[in-house]
Amino acid sequence: MSTKKYSFIYKNSLSIVFILLFAISLIGQIYTGWQEYNNFLTDHHQASSALSQYLSSGHFLQATFENWESEFLQMAIFVLFTVSLRQVGSSESKKLGVKEEVDRQPKYHKGSPWPVKKGGFILTLYKHSLSISLLILFIFSFLLHFYGSYRDFNEVQSLEGKATEDLATYRTNSRFWFESFQNWQSEFMSIFAIIFLSIYLREFGSPQSKPVDAPHIETGE
Image (cartoon, rainbow, N blue to C red; front, side):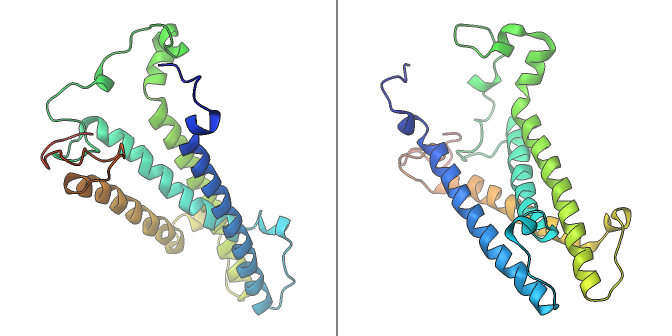
């Protein structure tokens, strides 16, 4: 179906709104985090940090990528698990015992992405490119969270006159893993909530919901 008759904003409104919400939230986090960090420095009789310095601090890196890490992990696991796992009645699950459109092997036709035409290893990689990309983003965020948490931990330790740790030792530090697990559990709970609640509850007009008059046992959108 042609999309030319629709404006750019209408065609991309979902992405536009979420990227704007992301930008607003990130700016809010940066500003309030900067103020919080400077309050911490003041309490320890240190000079305030410039905004440019704050953006490379462990405080900012840890707070930012701790959350990104859990989000990308959530989406990667959700994408992978919905391939083979089912939940009867949920709009987030494929139907039981039925081959769906997403299960058919790709065949090249006009408008197909170029990897479909290329075939071979390129196509094999492309068939799993969504989960691969999300996992790469998770690993990238996880490593930056680890590095930021490590720097922030050592800065606090140093200002309080306590022993610091090297990178190898910090891998087993309970603080770092607490930061990760507290975010992971909330992401897994939110996935469970949408999977389970979509069995019995509806949102008119949303593709994440079944039709309002659909039976509870009906699986899929």
